[in-house]
Image (cartoon, rainbow, N blue to C red; front, side, top):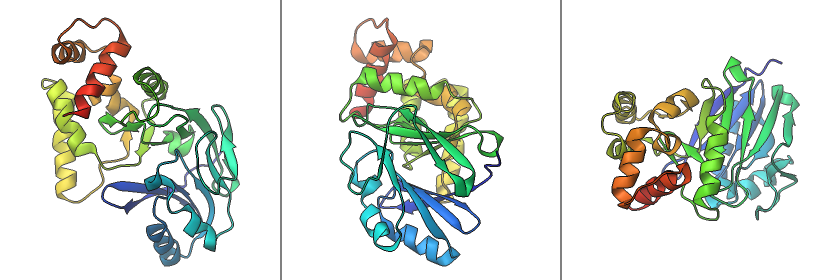
Length: 262
């Protein structure tokens, strides 16, 4: 299946990205917290909106949906069990979203933790590498805060994503990478791959360029929230918690609580 559609980041608010998928004169958007940048891009590029996809119910991800629906009559996909206005197709783990305009069939992956029913959209075929729209679950060099789920749920969700192919491009919803790198270096100061990534991120932000998408292979090497089995991360978690930690859930929980107050 030909899935070489373009993916465009539309900055919104202070640090959000709305991801716009386009092919020909058709477009879809993921997590449109604000309608204005979407409408401006559609008008400037003479595109027709054909679908809206939401990963979770927070306002900075769904707040623009009503305004978009005033101009476009389109399906709105999102997680079952979360309060999203105007949702037309509720999704659960293992469901599929077929967007014929782009030749794409997204697999729905349940990733609770940040919210109780957060989902991600995964296209394993895009550009021969794969594309993952993961909202606020996995960030470049970080992960989302745990608001409605539990640390155990969040680690399980991240483990599912980490098992995707290393070439998978990660289209997360916030530009948090620079601050995430600072925390990751506090956890693993001697991680050479992380040091290199932090330098690259600093350069990109100095040039006002996005630091995402990242790749899953990169995240496995630099993201402390995927590295609960790395000796240096275990040691840091034990040091910050002041007690021995033997289980991955314990290590992850300690690192996440440390990040909350970092």
